[in-house]
Length: 223
Ligand code: E4P
Image 1 (cartoon, helix red, strand yellow):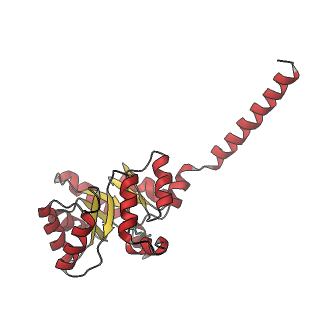
Image 2 (cartoon, helix red, strand yellow):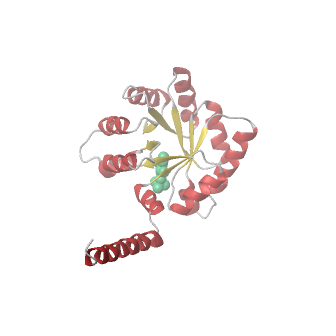
Image 3 (cartoon, protein in one colour):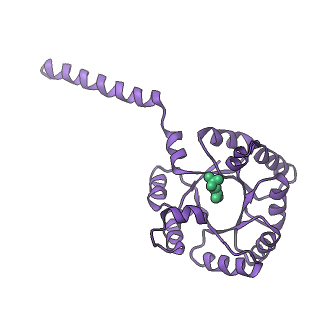
């Protein structure tokens, strides 16, 4: 199970890489807008690609096929590990299929149904991104899409990888892993929530205190 960071914040990407748990990065226009501070999107993508050798998703915003191709080809020139992120649509499928023919890897985004995921795989997307949290938000069980796609891809030996996106908390991560997602992309905060546990923090504090007490006794004994 691979873990991607769902962020355009370079410091967050650096931290996850230092922790040894980073397999890739997903960005989108909203994540970029949060941190851009005047920096071009391409610069942030280039920096991310230097930190991880795993896939870094760069999202196109054009609606027409030629526009998607032109934006995606430019992103693909930034680094070998760029995956062009294309939203599910009729034009999106065509662009994914054309990128595939050109050897450019893609991530089909804004997938909300199993059939959309199946079509994205047929068109040649390397990564398929069902949005779990946004489905949960409208009172649907987003994890069903992950589970059904995992089963279909296994039955039909489909190579595309299922990337659980729109992850809202640590429980989503566990559920996505159990449902058969190949990858989950996490906000930095969720990654931190996965690390911490109150009993771990309490245990560390107790060990430190006991160690200090024992060392004081060693010193008092004149050693
Ligand atoms: C990832 O590729 C998606 O862009 C992202 O997970 C969307 O998450 P959100 O629903 O929290 O915006």
